Image (cartoon, rainbow, N blue to C red):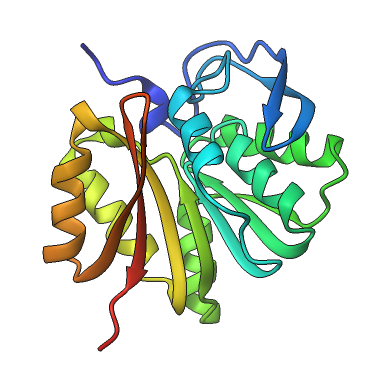
Length: 208
């Protein structure tokens, strides 16, 4: 089966036909816009729902990042929970970035910034900004080399006291990713939840 273009393409080939969705995000019923050519462009993905149901609120202040934001459900959930934080939704897909930007604006979430993932990485690295919390439904289907490089770069930007919550489908390698994070990246990893065929892994920088 070919890999959908939203995993790699900045400009999806499919038409940008906007679709209104009504979704429940951690106690908030919201109306958003989604579209083809982004991850889970017609619904709230099950793995994302598992993540949002499993973890506690993010920090009230600081820098929060949703890696692989799609149309923005995780970004919006973090922003609704933490109005005093700076929340970033990042994606390689420009349509996803624009949808997240539009959805945040429609909900009055002025503390959300939606960025191209490479631009965000360059901005954070150049400014020395450290991330207090990452929430992500990472793109497992890009393959292990690309996934590992993505996680290596983003987790490397965590503050010493920061953490990341990652949701991964069990039959797509959640347990092997858990081992890789512990052994190869030398991170402290906890299995926070298991639900509906998914694991939620919480990752913290290991104290040296």
